[in-house]
Image (cartoon, rainbow, N blue to C red):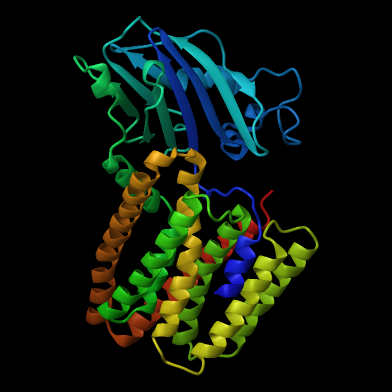
Amino acid sequence: MVCVLVALLLSSSAMAHGRSISYSSWEIDATGAKVSLRLKLLELSRLGPQALPPGSLSTAAPPGSPDLPARAFPTELVLIADGRPCSPESVAQRRPDAPGWIRYQWRINCPENAEHLAIRSQILLAVAPSHMHFARARFVEISDVAREQVLTEASPQFVLRQFGETRTETASGHRLVDYLVLGVEHILTGWDHLAFVFGLLLLSTRLADVARLVTGFTLAHSVTLALAVLDIVHPRAAAVEGVIAFSVGLVAIEKGWLLAGRPRIVPAMVLAGLGILAFAALAGIASIPLLTVVGLIVFSGCYFALIARSENEWLRVCLTFAFGLVHGFGFAGILVELALPADRLVPALLGFNLGVEVGQIGVVFALWPLLWIGRRWTGPRFSHLAGELSAAGLCGLGVYWLVERAFST
């Protein structure tokens, strides 16, 4: 555990959990708004190479080509005033941003002093239906108050002002429940997190085991979620994403290893695979830091050595806690990118963490009865086969994510 965390904490790079998401900020005045949209180049590539800025990739649009997103985004991210979309003054302008990110800005005009205002987003939904857009809106006349909301395909509209609502009511801050909903959506669309939870359920044979493992996971990711959002720790994104993928593969490998009678070749193959990844990191081919891979080698070797000699269930709780610390950094990605002001960090952390727990507990309550019924109503041979197939599928998924993230550009 210590090796993994030390490897993660050595970098000061910004981090974000790998999912389809974009961000916008709105400065709204009496006659319109200034809009700034920010997203990763990887998200922009979903629209095709012709959407990428010239020079960003070898397959990007050549210099002099039309900027397709500059025309499309102002029509996909709009402000609705009294039932009608406000009109953009011109196409969006591309602005410089951090490496790997792209920013567009534009101005929109609305009827003066509109009584009903709402932001509607269809950004990237045509190519990524699970895309989440996080909008932050601020009224110029009440500049010290901002409101945020996540927009999805199921909930694409963010109402800023209702008919008959006063300016004070409009400015009433952000609700805790909005962050709770964001946390639920985050865990339910985080397939790697869900896969890890499913792996924990495969390793559990009793409800008490489930309670211990989920509690350890919850305590751990709550700690690192807070550390990252409060700007105390800055782990490197590539390290976080790689370790999360590895955690999925390792819990699946342990399940298969136990079902096969604990053959020595399984730990050896895990260490050999990590050794290959270490050489790739040393050669500069892999994006995961070498120290992170070395930490995983030491961690995996120690863990297999311990569980080969002991049946103590608390060893698995320790494993869950260790990986929960890393998953917490993954959960924090969306809140870190929002750069929330200090006065909203506490409600954001509380609501978001509660949402993650609600979603996680919902998944456990949905899956555990099915696994219990399957084990109870089927014979040992079928149950054994189902366990092997589940472990193999989950292991393949974890390995795929690890390779994809380790060798992504």
